[in-house]
Length: 366
Ligand code: PMP
Image (cartoon, rainbow, N blue to C red; front, side, top):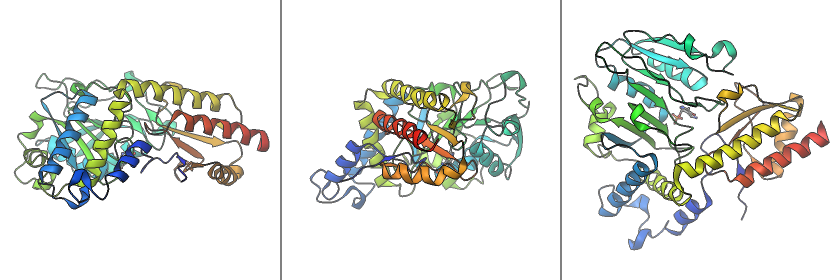
């Protein structure tokens, strides 16, 4: 059987151990004679799966008790507007960082619901840098502040969450983070955030599942006309079973959480992630043949875009990489070139193999 080193940005590769366990349990889940995907979400077997997954995620991220963890559908794309609908609370404005294609998409979506103030705009640098702190312009009347800690397409990552300004009520403005492509890649202090959301298909599991972590005081004072499917309160009160949840992705996410615990948790995987990213950036920077345009201080550990000196070689590079078992390296169409997404499940050996391939390719085509 062949397993490629798959550098896809998402859906992305999952750990072999997880896939093997899912295969072994596929037809007969823990002596039920049924697959997990065939059992009711209200069965005691599935409830156990759901609760264990939540407990493991809470442990991995040290999620405080006053935060709810929701397992939803709709992708990160639904969370742009859903988080706004739950946090606006009558407010008419929100503050957004624009640091790449995904925060730009979030801004366009939320602009249907309220006025959007751009706190800091990376557009002028073609999203190769994050504007300096002293140039950030928060507004006085924003209901919340939104940012995307890791921009999957442009490969730009905040090393720390931004500190939000203090509002008229004397409290820090709520902070919302789209962590789709960096959740579980490094430790975070959940208490610094009000809402964290992430599509699962990178560091959590397969697509079809969205994880939301929301501080429980935001479940109050929701607008009366908020459809219940869009209400964090409705999903929290129903233990994410307000409607039928994505049971199989939830189960697979649980296997990934268990795998991550066995790797030593988020602190341990962060060390591997730093090593993987550093060696790949070092290889790119050491060569005139490959270029990464992102300012070193904000380079992503998860998504590394790079270009070849001669774009005419892109197709050959991709073809030969594929033949070497290194797949899905094509960059996003808006940026071009290549992109190596190296989430938690990408073994260090995969990054080593990519670097060796790149050096060989440069020798033969450079
Ligand atoms: N935000 C980020 C940072 C992403 O990388 C993606 C998908 N690649 C999205 C949002 C959109 O996610 P979804 O397709 O799950 O809606």
